[in-house]
Length: 380
Ligand SMILES: Cc1ncc(COP(=O)(O)O)c(C=O)c1O
View 1 (tube, rainbow, N blue to C red):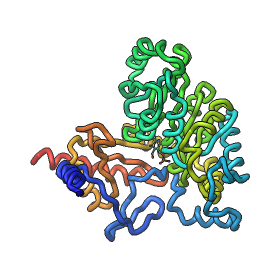
View 2: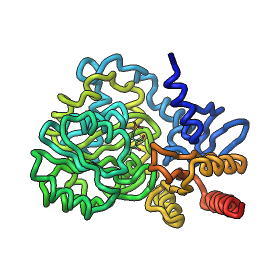
View 3: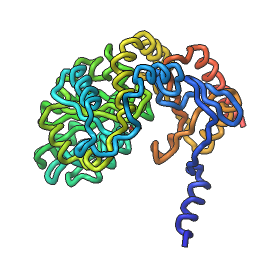
View 4: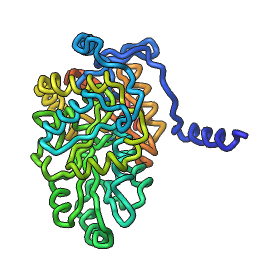
């Protein structure tokens, strides 16, 4: 009865594509404990070190003082909206200086809900080829059409707009700002120009930039001064905030539309109040104190050739990538092999993601080890 699935799993194994869960012993700020070893964690999205941080957890619980529960027991549209949800939404609307914010249960919920709801029959989405799976899934669920343009290729995007825009009613250009697997940044200023020229809505996903870029930590749009030009900005709380959940901030009309039509928002229990309170507490009280650390992290990344705190080390072959992670493990570093379908075939890689307390010399030693291992491999 299980033959088809068994065969599929065997295929995955034979191509080094098989994924399995790992049992970590514990995590403590920039370190992770695995198979009896203390390892420098280069595989988390805990960019500001607020997750897995005992001091932060204790400080927050003292502040919360038993006020917030661990379950909302209802979707937002039923009985799931308590004052703390409005407070977090208002905080974000004020920070971005936009009409309204809507919280989602995760970045996945946000992107799936937004693309599937907004892109109606007769509409179209133009999406960067490397956009996150949640954006792709949202487009697939939508009733509208979608086109994917080559990654960050503005000429190709414009050609597509010239060819296709007039065939559709509403059009959306959707992109990440900082790309999760490549760490590079989309040419958002050019997209603003194109969206105006071709009358499109612009939606950006700042999942990896929220908390890292911009003086207030609002993302790349803040650092470029183009927040007002973007119709919907998505950010997540599972990365820099060290929490869980996501938000979309934009105009009253678009947000009201999402409240009424985004199925991932409507048909899911709201996040626990304690979690919402934690996200709010971090953004309000801790983000402003991280400016220097964030800048330092980005300047270290820049020296290593990356535009963001995410540094891809592309190896190519699946097995070589897995082997390199193993070597790094034995040298005190926790890295993960990123393989297709997460990245295109032939571009398997180690994705180094920095967190703000990692020292430059820790990374130099790591890069030495990587280069040494690659040379040994070439020599064989
Ligand atoms: C660009 C991007 N958007 C959205 C998500 C999904 O966010 P979440 O983990 O909150 O579901 C991720 C990764 O998790 C991401 O990298």
